[in-house]
Amino acid sequence: MITISQVVEEIINKTPFLEEAIAKGIVNHSSLARLMKSEIEEKLYKTVKTGAIIMALRRQAKKKQLNPIIKKIFSTPPDMIVRSNLVEFTFSNSDSLLTKHKKLLEKIENQTKYFFTITQGVFETGIIVSHELEQKIKDIFEEEKVVSQLTDLSSITIKLPEENVTTPGVYYFILKALAWQNINVVEVISTYQEITLILATSEIDTAFSILKKSLVT
Image 1 (cartoon, rainbow, N blue to C red):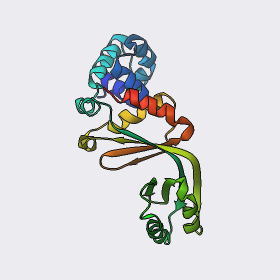
Image 2 (cartoon, one colour):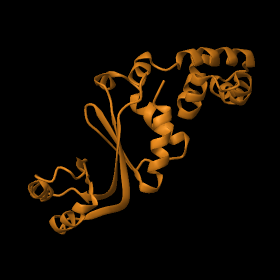
Image 3 (tube, rainbow, N blue to C red):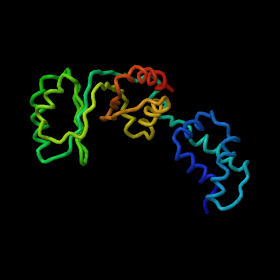
């Protein structure tokens, strides 16, 4: 039989911001219990006491505490690198696209100062480059179907320790700080020990400031 605690946890998990607020202890449990009461009763098909919901919320607050490994990872400010003047092209995948990739790599093999990344999905491929390479992309991929092209982008690359790969919630810890401040992330690119966030250039200063303050536990 489903319990009050299970229903409370289900409701909280559906709302990441609420989950974070409960973990930080900034939510009034009594008020939240009254707000959740009708939904819980509907799921359980019975009347429940507000006190029982409050107890379930307190248990969730303890359960949602920040992973100690995440605390360790962000015990000191991580190295962050900002790049500006980026553009993004998204192409539909095709039989000829891989050949174009090879041609592009040959063109820029000695131009390591530029930002360059390719992400191949199931149906689309995204290429993000410094604006100096924009014309090369247009020339090489001129016969490919362009899904979208975005300009005026910048990036923030965050260096992470090896533990990030086996620690749940590391990326969430980074991204929620921006989401709380209504900062839109256009793309997320990751490697083994790096995560790169692509944002509109107009938001990059604010995003960097937010991350600098929030990524220290």
